[in-house]
Length: 395
Ligand code: GDP
Ligand code: MN
Image (cartoon, rainbow, N blue to C red):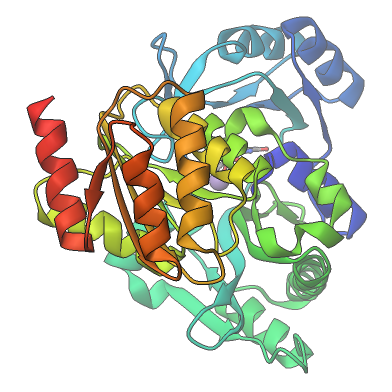
């Protein structure tokens, strides 16, 4: 799960990670008021979307930049007017962009240096790692490619936690000394605590800035949270903005289905993540393109199967469906009944190939055969993929 920058700043405040003061607005009027209430001349107006690269982004109406410095509350109002209700395209949004319905108005900070700081879970060591770079304010992937020597990695021992020598080491690598090294160390300690206590999988501050006055502040933030830990993070769940997510994925998550929308036209409904990936591969192998990844899980209920069909059919690109079930915990006859009920309920007219294997497979196949519905049966995975690709091509 992701959150907006303004929500990330609320977490920063709770955990004493220094950032600039600000507030949110959903109308130009409100933007002006917030700017005025900050009591400073210069503010920065920032489009709130779940994607980075906003500064260099372009709105579909031609307006350039999702981050702007304004010299007065009136100017903040103008910028807000140009962003709100508009679609911002950045290198992270894809060409369709994201609708801006909120802007953050923050006190503009004078910047001496822009740095980069992140904490993530390193899959290789199964432990947190701190990533720091002197090249802040830029696309970190580009830095990694062109000047990898300017990126520092500091693995954190999961039991010992962040040690003060490590904080000093990172500060030194960032070229910070004296008072600033102390401030950076404190910030790092607070950020690490936030990372752990809120079950983050990633926290990224780009840029972390040093001001001419010597302050060290987080000016932007991107968070990812571990979905499996959300049950114990009610205040994080409360920050979820479903309008930022793929509506098909939101619907799937309501039924505990693992669904990821893709661009192809052959939908698949599979039990088990590995089998789902193999199914997508084999569709591709026979010249088709999968419309989604969908794992209904080991113990899918009739309701879940029906919901899965609903989500699949809600995608207008879908021209055929491949069901690939390996009966284990779930028996093939029960799954067959669930599928047939969903087919009837949705008045399915698209080609549907069903491949069943595993426990009670004979009974499952018999139920499909005797249903009288227009369903294509397949014996194995290759047979199923070939049949659905052919059926979609013929349609
Ligand atoms: P992003 O483009 O989505 O990563 O948005 P950021 O919040 O990182 O802003 C982009 C850039 O705008 C930053 O790298 C800074 O150079 C600049 N910027 C953001 N906030 C301020 C500010 O308060 N003062 C100044 N001078 N520049 C800022
Ligand atoms: Mn940024």
